[in-house]
Image (cartoon, rainbow, N blue to C red; front, side, top):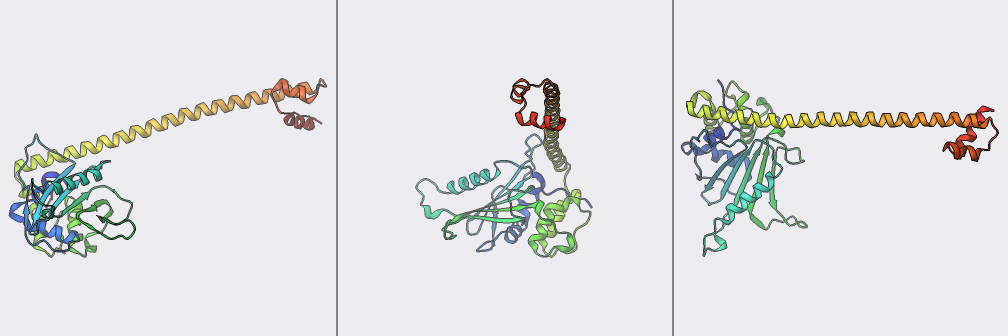
Length: 300
């Protein structure tokens, strides 16, 4: 049994934005998010369609949905790290919020927008894999703006093994992170939606066209990672070369300085035998009077 990687674009959308199995996305959101009211009905606004091979994207995977309360959910899988990803999340969410209001509409018609970013990299300093971000009063920590919310799941911080999974949310996150490394369906699944997600992720369930696109996206991800790693390696090599050259140059300079100092001391030693005073010798050799005095005392 072999599963596709749910983090790739086509797999993520085939599993979570499938019109025929909306219960998968509904349970995933209900279990991973902290919602005042659970999602009972869900409309996927951009349902899964097999993409064209020439129109692939590998870094951001978007799903848009709306529930029975007309709350909008933006779900994005971010495979590659981007410096401005958080700004993009804010932009997408605020844009989706503002576009709700039609010309002549009232502000009271605006509905909450809840963003969920699933990240295959570390984005925040906290050690827990899940974080929830809201607009709060800095002093009182009260929340007066309820319509924008940002949630993030950082997969690299989730380290539980199969036998350690307790909550349904943990089992979903384990599926996202580990499915591609498994050769079996975990025995501790206890929801139909989870079982269906694993079933959809089985490669033998996929058409030839879907597998071709999946493999192309996998290759693009590996290519991107190789480019990033190559740049890092070249940067390290260049840094080592610069450090070595700087070290050699510094060593030569120090050696030269030491050689000149020894030569000056030797000249001062010879001049002391002629009876010249210390001040005169200091001016002639660029040594300090103290150094010449010390040299004179050692000679005695």
